[in-house]
Length: 625
Image (cartoon, rainbow, N blue to C red; front, top):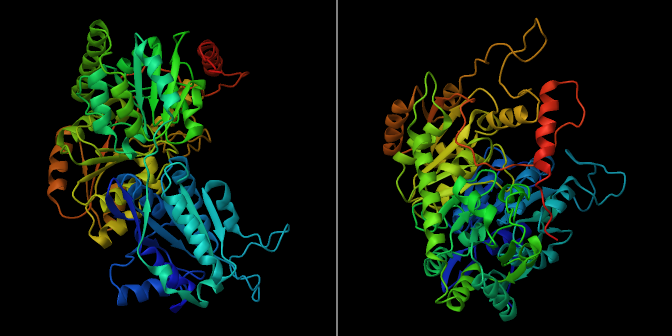
C-alpha cells in the first residue's frame, strides 16, 4: 500500500479538495474553499497546509481571509444556500474566542438545515503546556474545552486526539454535510499539536470521492393516503417551504399546480418557488404573509406542506388554519418534519413526491369557482403592493417605498439578501420574485448581522448575479466588517442601508405588547430624565462604510435612491447606498397574529391594554393533535 507522510493539517486540506457531490448526474465540488482567521491553534497546522496547497496545487482549496469568525460562517451558509446545499465552504479558526465566535453561525446553519464545515482549533491533547493561552480549565474534566459549546448546535461533532482518527472523522463529516435530512453545522475540532503531527496516510484517502445526494421516493401507502385527501378537498392550499428550493422542485411544483389548480403560498425559505405572477401564486403565508394567502389558509380544508418545518411564523402561532375540519399533508425529506401538524406524513424528496402526486391526481382539478376566488384575492393583494411601493411620504419615505424602488431596479436573475428586523417581513409580503434564486432571506434564525456576510457568500456562489443586500442600521452596526473582505476579493455587493435610527421591528413589537418602544431607538441619554430619549445619535454610517474601502453615499428620497442604485449596478466593486426612513410608517398588514406573551400584571395602562388584546387572540390558538 502506497502511503504519503503528511501532517494532519496537510492531509485534511488534500482530502477536502477532492470531495464532490452528485445529483441527477451533475457533479459539484463539495468544499469550494476555506474562510479563515489565524491564531495560535491553527496557524501552524491548517494555516501552513493551506499555504503549501496554494503554492503547490493552486485551486485545490482556495483560502479567503475573513474579519469576524461568526461572519465567515454566515458567508459559508449563504454560499451553501445559493448552491442548493450541493456545495459549501470550510471555516477555520484559532483556539478559544476565535472558535466560540463561530457558535452563533453554527446554530444558524443547523436551524436552517444548511451545510457548513467548521474546523476550530483546540487545546493540546498532550496537556504538556496546560493551561495554554485562552484555555478554559473546567472543573468537571480535563478533556472539556470551550469547543464543547458546539455540540448542541452541530449535526455532527468530533475532536481528534490522534492523527489516526482523521479519516473516520472526515467520512462522518462528509456524510452529514451531504445528507439533506441530517445536514447543518459539522464541527471537527483540531487540537493544535495534532494538526502539526505527521502520519503515514494511505494514498487512496486523497482520491477523488463523489458523494451521491439521493432523491428518496415516498412510501406508496402514504402517498395514496395523501392523494385521497387532496382528491376530495374543496379548498386545498399548498404551502411551499425551503425544501422545494433545495430539491430543485420548482418546475415540478409548477406542473403540479397547473394540473390541479391548487393555490401556492410560500414560507420565507420557500419564497420564489413560483414566479410572483403565476396564476396559482398567492404569495407569502403567515405572520408576514399576504392577505390572499392568509384568507385562503383560514378556510382551507386540506393544507399540503412541501418542504416546510411549520414554524410559528408560517402558522401564525397556530391560529391561521381556522377551519375546524382542516386536515394536513406534509411532504418532507426529513420524517420528523413530515410528522408535524399530526397530518398525513409523506417522507421523501419534494420533486419526486410532487411528480408522483401529479400523475395520481390527473383529471381531478379544483372547481372553477375556487380558481376565480384565488385569482381575485391575489389580484387584490397585487394592488396593495402597488400602493405600498408607489405611495410617497414626506419628509421621509416608508421602508416599503425603498423596497419598491429596489424591486424596480433589480434584474430578474439578480438576488436580494436580508435576515433580521422589519425588512424581512416587508420583503416576504411585498417582494416580487421573478426567477429562481432571486430571494435569499435568512429567517430560520433571523440573525442580526447575517446580511452582508450572507450576501458575500451568495455572490461567491453565483458570480453571474448582482447581489443586493438590504440591511437596517441596527444589523449594520452589529456586523459590517465583511465589506473589507468584499473589497479585498474584488467582490461586487450592492448594500442598501435603511437608516431608521434604531430597531424598527422590535420597536413595533414593543409597542404591541405595551412596552412603549422602550430601548429600541438610537438616542442619547437625556441627563434631565436619565432615560435614553434625547437627541438621535450622530452616527455617520456612510463614513463608516467608506472607511472600510466601499464606495458609499447617502441619498434623500426614493428618486435619489433609484439613481444611486443604477450607478451602483454599473460599478465594478462593492457599493453602499444609505437612505433614512420613517420607522413609524408600516407596510400593509398580513392580518395574522404572532404569539409573544404580554406581562400578566402591570401598572402601565399600555401593558394592561396589550394584555387584553393578547388574551383575545390567544383564544383562537389551536393544537393539532
